[in-house]
Image (tube, rainbow, N blue to C red; front, side, top):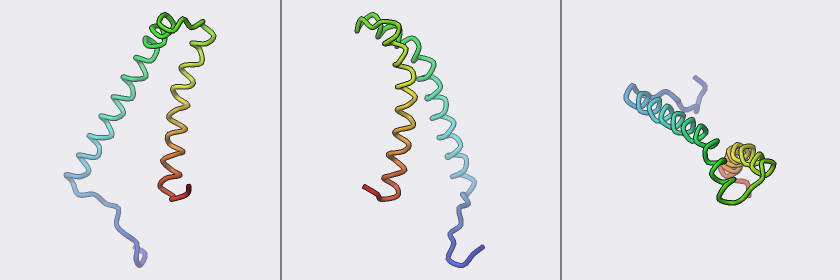
Length: 80
């Protein structure tokens, strides 16, 4: 290992907890994504959206993840 470098290894308990947390987040994201189609149908009725307008909801939903990732990256780097 290089001088001054920190070890990134986790102990057995921490690894199990990390894998469990990541698996849970992945499953919750999958559940939210599968419900997205049902929500769009409901939004079409409630907000009186056309099919064209409702078609933009799903890309906007996933674009939010990309924008969130970029903002977190910017915050981590300490840039305004």
